[in-house]
Length: 219
Image (cartoon, rainbow, N blue to C red; front, side, top):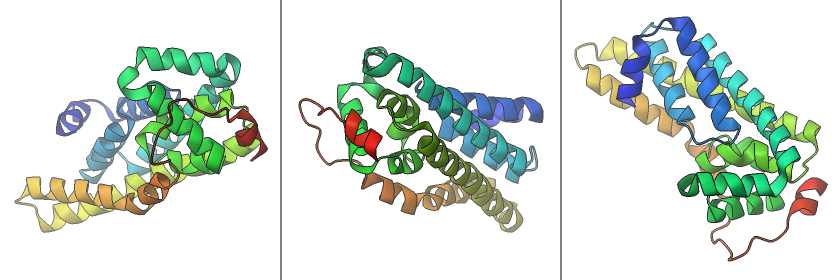
C-alpha cells in the first residue's frame, strides 16, 4: 500500500481522482483489482494535503456506483455462464467456491448482500454481475448499490483523512507512526460493517450451488 501511495503522490490531483474512480469502477464490474488499497492510499494523500478528500470520496463513490451498474447490466445479459468464464479467468478470486458463497449470500439476504458486499472483497467484485445474472430488480439493486457505495467511499475517506491529519499534528517527527495509526484507523472504521457482512456469507460451501435465481429475485 505504501508503494501505491508513493506512486500516486507523483501524479497530478486530477489524474489521481480519475485513477480512484477507474480502478474502483473496473473492480466493481467484476475484475479483481485493488480498489480498496487505492482508496486508502488516496485518503492518506488527502490527509497530507496532496488531494482534496471530497473529490477522493466522490470519485470512489462514482466509480463504485457506475461500475456496479455496468456489472449488473453485463451480468443480466451474460448470466451465469459469464460468471463461470470469469471464474476460469480469475480462479484465485472468482472460482466456483467463491461464486457459490456469493450466490448463497444473495439467496439468503437479497439486496442487503449488495449493501454490505461493498465492505467485503469477494462481494465487492461480484455484487453487480451476480445481481444482474440472478435478475434482482434493478431499482432495488440501485438503492442498495448507491447506499453502500456512498457509505463506503465517504466513510473510509473522511475517517482516514481526519485521523491522518491528527496523526500529522501530534506525530510530526514520527511520520511512520502516523501512517500506521491511519491504516489501523481505516481497518477499525469498517470493523462493524465487515463483521455484519461476514454474517451474510455461509460458513461452508456446498459441492454444488443451489439455484437461487428465483429466491434472489423475490427479495
